[in-house]
Length: 416
Image 1 (cartoon, one colour):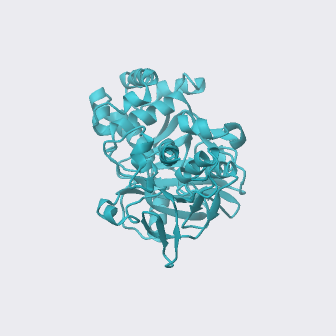
Image 2 (image 1 turned 180 degrees about the vertical axis):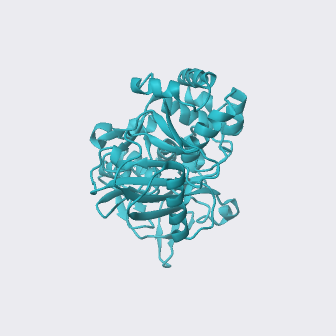
Image 3 (image 1 turned 45 degrees about the horizontal axis):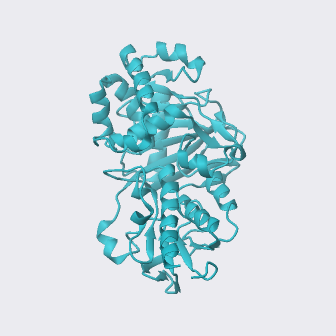
């Protein structure tokens, strides 16, 4: 089959779909990406509101991700670094805990912090060292428990679990109980221990934007909402359809494939709200953790503690909520402002925007690090991509996109 005449469709212009397209283009193919919204990025998007740069949810890039290192030009992204630590609010008091081996200025605040015992702090360094020496594939072969069970079994005190691990990793896993797989905890912990949390100067959307710039032969069709995908036919919500020799579904496939509809994914939800304020309660680029159990808010961050491409006149504060609630937008804003004042001593000025993210991260069990290209094949013509196939991370999104494209290429090679 001629490469130019081979019709390869990719459903979804998120990170997985873009990586799949890059992989196919390298082998001389020209895929078409069908995207249901008006722009690329999937869950990785940035808006400009009143001159402020707002990511869709508080997101960071872990620069130790192997797939990010493979596909992204870090220098061109102008990555802004978070300090390796956190500013913890608990019972009206604030303290700092961090990794003094990478940021010496965090040594004395960490030693003086009431977040955990001296034994806890020693265990943190031991765990760092252990995970640095373990291969990623090895981590994902370990017995799977919850993150909370893992931390308790490791011997961490209730104090450091409540004050640090719960709010910190709840903000990453987007669930408040640390029920997420211990494999995922160890993977993310290893990535933090091996590198840094960073944000592109232009916001998180600079990542898919850079991936799109690597494409020269891929066609994009936006506002193309797919209703059904059957073998070689893709049917859209407006009733039209197109033919494809092969299709990569780089989004949740269960609504699109009739025999998968009973296997719909469950998703973690979260809320991110943006406010302006006259001054920062946290001077340095540290994530703020709210460790009080009765607080609705989980973590905060002053985006103006980093350099951003777009900058308004005031300080920009994001607030993340991971606990379930049934509040209206107005009620949520009022509750968040009350929590900020009560638990952090923060008064905001202008409320900018609320991002209710219903499909923030897939809820997964028996998570994996990698998969073979052949494992992405659903039918003779249809292949799957997306972080839900592996684990909820940007690294998994990239890896699955690459493997799905390689799955198509393997079939084409055999047929040719």
